[in-house]
Length: 502
Image (cartoon, rainbow, N blue to C red):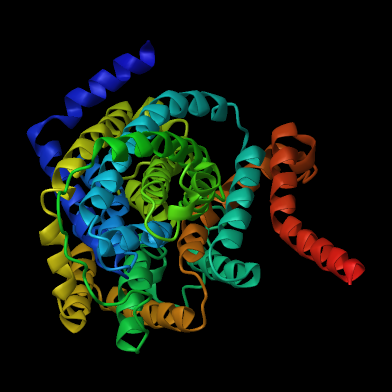
């Protein structure tokens, strides 16, 4: 009952005119960047961090969450009409959605994607409302050693999930941890990695690093000749009715619910993300469908299920972010930086110290879902026209906006130089297929993990065995080791079994 009262209080905050405007701006921007391949919600939030640091914290975070949800919606439009996923999680949607569009059923494909996203987003946000306070209450019992172990799990799982290999992911994490060391050591007062530059004594600004790694690095990668992924380049016209038939509704509601059941729990896991539940949803629908022959030819279930899983996972990623302060996706990592920009630390105490902010944010997600379903179907023609923007103009504008934003937040030559240097680093990482998200996760969580480890050792007079004698800490560290070694052992086991068969 207390949760319901808090949600109603959050709803009263979310429906304030200014917050409604922030939500509308967020979902509109999110849909636009979801449509544009290569942009994505993570880059958009990173670009907005420097220019929103003086705005109201609640409104800014509502806008960031709207961008996250909108990005998931928008990715389906180009997947269906252009066979070019705007987001990686929309890859599965393109398999059946584009076939439906070529068969003259692009309207029902867009409709089932939008309505499925609304249904899944609403159910998943309701589950977030129920489970987040419960998990926050459990997390309050965590000691410093438990928090350290939890962050180790986040380091390992995020590094293993992003990128083409665990080694590349761990290397990116090491870069992030190193960036997090820059500045004055809070315990000893000694300068670390400042190289005699006074501007670096306060450490690196997360907003500067985020803008450089996501926006500047991406723009350089595109300018450097990286090819656009997938797609035929031909936009399929929407022919016939935009609405779904009775048969379409009958075949869609089951996949919507099953997709939600896949998306929310997997999205809430430290190694979750949106890609895994969308593939699981597609495989499940193909297996249980009464029309298996339609898969590969334009089965509506193959659009409805993955799109529901995609959007449910977005709500799932907010559970560990809000309750534990652990980001499980690139956008969640940038949102964590947004919280810290306003001196807010996501975690169990956030529900106690800033209930208006967190409940206003959760309530706004329900409103954002309604806005998105209204925006996506009637304005589909407008979103597709965004694809005609010349890429040099688009990325040139991103570079200008990134530079101006960083200078507005902190007018410093050192800050501008950091944007250039880190942008070049991000460009090189993209060239050699190193993931960017672990860098941000390492930079944000690294200092926090260091603080918790030192606190745990101070309490026990330097006894490091507290990390394995605490039941919670020992369990979490075991999970981290398992996450690191299990894929290696599984691969070797598979190789041994194959050799035996030969």
